[in-house]
Image (cartoon, rainbow, N blue to C red):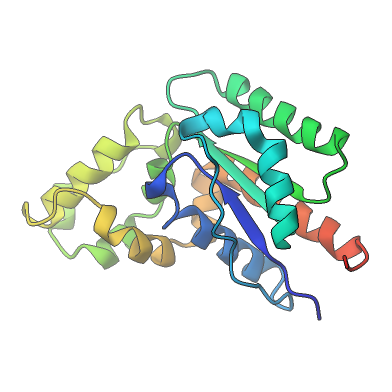
Length: 209
């Protein structure tokens, strides 16, 4: 059976412990029979959402490395969600116009990636054992500063021993319950559907030489 290889275009280094693991979990849950190859280590040249302008070039590089799907996720920050979605869709259209045989699975994190990590309180309590009654959780996609809130929760639960979640990003990502994340973060659910659609498209394609 063919192996599926993913590549990633993300905004910064802090995204790479989280989004690739979530993506692999989504694929493994929806397609348990599909073997996954090691992810591509290629990274976009531009940081932040500026990489969107270079998606065709980056997709070509991934194609040359044998990647099948390009996962591109950006934060919406304080911009309009529709504006960031339009940028991604324009990049996807350019890749299609150039007939680059790498499916682009786009995603929007509203307003930041950390909203996804706030979606499952039980996962946070599993990783950070502290006084659960001392913290409250906002609606992830309605919170203006999910990164600040998540780090505050970590400081409270650890009584100041940890000031950021960053060192525990992998553990949090593995502990999150995907069905709950999809329920509480509609834009993650949209991303997951884009990714699974790419896998279905890949399954229909003949094997590349």
